[in-house]
Image (tube, rainbow, N blue to C red; front, side, top):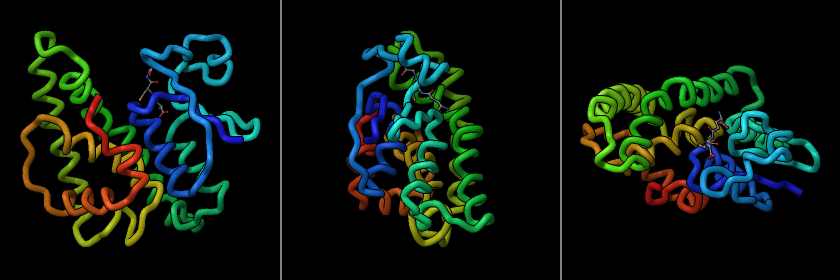
Length: 206
Ligand SMILES: N[C@@H](CCC(=O)N[C@@H](CS)C(=O)NCC(=O)O)C(=O)O
């Protein structure tokens, strides 16, 4: 039995639900985090001392860190289309996953929180402007990468698309000015053709 803890409007939970549906896994999901609490309990801290979502329990194997969970599930179910088994193909995917967390998130997280989860009268315009400008630079990197590619690491979906594709939806849904990025827009269109992406990621922002 696979159990997933995490609220559905968490970007890190979305990736895990997305990969589960791509693989065709059945699971139970337990609401946790923010208004649901749960993360404050001792039982939860025993699973994840960071008290963050998501966490999974896969037949007794407990794991946290969303990108790691995505790779684990793809690997456990031998989905070499999603998680290449050659070192270079795998490293290419992992590089974009790490980049999404280490770089893209550093501007997208404040931008999202300011514009979606902070009341308008408490927003910091300087933070918004800086985060929007930085995000535009990261999206230009993605635009260059996606030119001539259907997906981030080639002609089919891989684990690399899960963190990056989740941020792409958020950016395109945010009320910010955006330059025209045709390759990125076409990539988003391809992601939207996938039912798991529509089901778990492409939601109104909350
Ligand atoms: N690096 C962690 C970050 C986890 C994280 O920060 N999760 C956020 C939601 S996106 C969280 O738990 N926030 C507190 C809460 O929901 O109570 C991962 O990728 O799993």
